[in-house]
Amino acid sequence: MHARRFERSQYEVPDDDGGNFVCLTCPSRVTSPPMVQGKDVGDALVEPALAPIRKASSRLRDGAIAEGLAGFAKTELLAGLKNGIQNAAANIGFPTAEVEKLFDWDTLLPALDRLSAAQTAAWQAFHDQAVSVGGLLTGLSRGTAVDVYRESGALALRNVAQRFVRDKQLFTPLDTLASEISAWEALIAQCGDIMEHSPLVARSLKRRFLLRIAGAGAALILVVVGLVVWWSEKKIKDARSRIESAINDADACKVESIAAEDAERATPDQLTRKNARMQVCTEKRAIAAHEAACETLARNFAAGKLTPEDKTQAKTAAELLERAVKLELSTDDLLLTPKEMPCLDAPAKTQFFPIFAKYAAGSSGAWTNATRVSDDLRKALKSKEIETVTAWRDELVRRAEPHAAKAILSGKPEDMNRARATCEFQNSFGIEPGKKCSGLLAFMASRKL
Image (tube, rainbow, N blue to C red; front, side):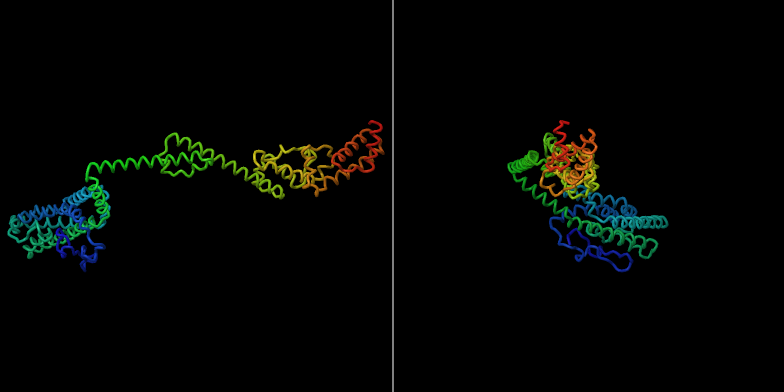
């Protein structure tokens, strides 16, 4: 133990059950060997913390027992501990609050409260006894062998108490106070040990070591400061270079890779351009999501299975696509062009009309009265993908011959004109006309009807 420590017996305090004694500072309780460099820091705390006790002990030695007992007041001891903490904090160069966090105040404050109660009782007992015997007690501690500068205040007070061992009303409170002071001294010693072994000491020693190295000469200090400034400027320069690279990258979303630490070092202009590129990135992702949704819509449209999301994506064309998938297109739908298809602003826009044309070819009901189709649909119907869909051809063939036969029989101009339009519409797709259509068209051509 260090020279500033008390005898081990002074560190033994009753446990919570009041029976066995627990050694608060025995070597078995120390988890690591003391740091020689930390001793001064521990002493810096303990010396001021014990100063009120030593002062009170000095008064006891001088025979001023009442003043000595008053010196053990809670306010005095707490002030001493606070001074010790401030002294230790100043010694290691850390805030007082950081040092206070090291200690178990749930143990210290209750111990101080117990001591305060014992001090009040002892002082009152001494005052009562002194009054009852005319004040003769004030000198009974003179001539004792106690050296309060070398031994604890508890020993000094216990030595005084022994002089009144036969007077239990005075001896008992004095002895109780001596025990509480002994426990308090042990706790202060523990605080010194905690201070010595705290990481704050190691950090302080490291910092002081660096300061001593820096203090080797003004030239070295200038070099260190120059290096720090250079390094700081280099970090700023490197950060801004990385930011500039990200901003100028072809991929606008590259700005997302800018670290928060780098962003803190950006110039106002870089921050403005970074935000602008982020806006471009957001718009780019929105476009990508829109294009992906259009691709999905085209794929599901071709498969004949439209989801609610597809209908939302199709917007005003949703109803048209639903009719197409159900092969329920109308005669007017045959006049539509690619401009009526959805996703005109996406790469998938070219996929919709060929699919629509295939559904149009399968919607036989749309061809029942049709005499015109859009040029785009006419062209699409000639593609190889639609060759296997014959519903539209079958419908044209089915209705052309009956119309021609009816016109020939009736001879009415309106029937003949309607039948000619139907037969010519059929012929416009390269479908070979039947006998009645051929006869009607030849007859009307010869008559120039």
